[in-house]
Length: 157
Image (tube, rainbow, N blue to C red; front, side, top):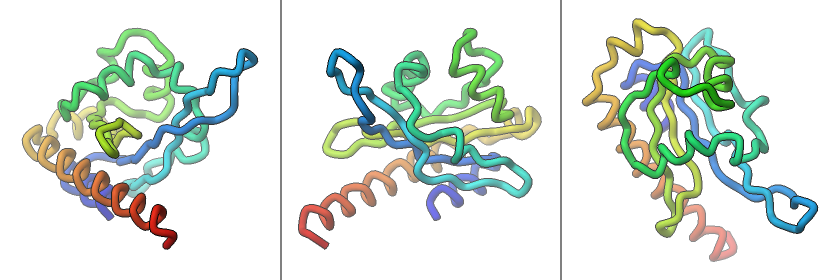
């Protein structure tokens, strides 16, 4: 519900929650750090990323992931990104602009919430103040929910 509210209020095409996890090991025994899309809200006619956004290596998105640490909900235009896997990934999903914030649990970044704009005119007309407000609101709600789920799991519920 929070992702849908964020999508509607930000007038964007797609909102997502991506979470980090381990998945397998390299031959030297080091754990592979991965990310997967766990929740998504889509505007009518917008293709979802669920299938292609599972079990991705975090190392493919290093430049993008460094932006998440900034905890800044500013909009970023894909055309301004340097040539990289991240830019190709966004372009292949028709994303022209995005906003992203980290999701923390116990002060550790465990994922991120993201809004995508898939049409230039929607991105350019977005109200930055509303986007910032709703991104931070959604960030807090998801963090509270993850903390509550962790408590339920810890208590055996």
